[in-house]
Image (cartoon, rainbow, N blue to C red; front, side):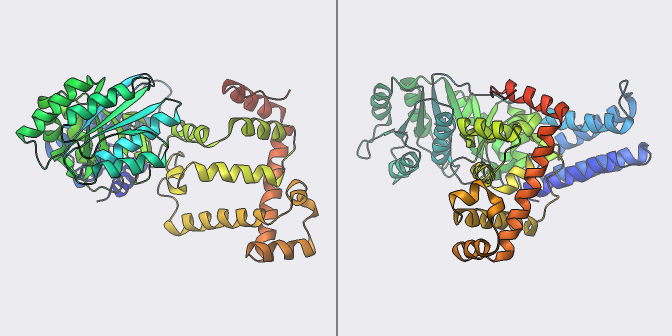
Length: 446
């Protein structure tokens, strides 16, 4: 079972609770069996699954709903709370001056994660430096250098040096003015004595704020023993679970690590440099259950948008003015926030509702609209009502689309414009929106 299917199974169980005409013992036990099967297929430990099932049944049958909450809502909340509990507490790496020592076995995604973490801190305004201390793996220095170059982060290393401690010592001096220093260490096929000795020596030189273990989610329940072994050796304080996307054993890895008492700080959700997310058990389970993650959606939007451009767009929209230029800016922002499927998963109730064909159609439509607008003149983008007849034919030829596609764009624009005009004219809704925007430091027009 892929991790996506795991989420779908949990969502189906939750729907069974919320859509039940009458919630009795039989329905509750049937739902718990569904959750039990989903957890076992996702490689969650059998004993942990049985304990969770027992707790769910006891709480669902014995606890009375608080005032104002229906029995169905109460049971749904219990399911959510207990699933969060099996993941333990998350941990956040603060945006401050720190030294991070990355450790792990071969093939766990450690070097790629070093680049992703550098990108994470860089996007939040911190000055980052990477030390390439893997002196054993061929081409390790070249790999981290290529990743770092793609995000304009400096790397310190020496392919000819075989003493990792020396490289780290020199790197610490070079990056003493940096906010975040990330040390990428050597891996092994197992926890061999020479690996432990080297990591201890490097750790002594680096004096890390956090020792971060990188683990592959496909290890499943074996992630737990590995986390414990590394902790015993070098005192692991944080864990990054890489390659969680699509992993059939992701549930096992998550639950196994939480059992060790180690705190998961990040999860890898894809191969791209930005595919790294802060791990928050509550938000993670919310998304699995189809409740969405609006907080992360807003964070991605903030990262993707030009703040000054966003302020201007909001002012024009609230003044009832909305052009194709504004629509184009919105599409650019949407593209900068990542793949459409991932964005949809952050919206409440959206996971699993759109098929691959639907998503592909939506992506194609957005790309086509941008091609069309790229073929328009400045006057046409500013005053879309002049786009008629021969102009439509010319734009279609220039964008490699059809006149029908151009008319579809104009239809979509007019629908958006009318909706925004209606919002701007609704004093109550406008007032609410103004409060939200002002809370986000937007200077709204009065």
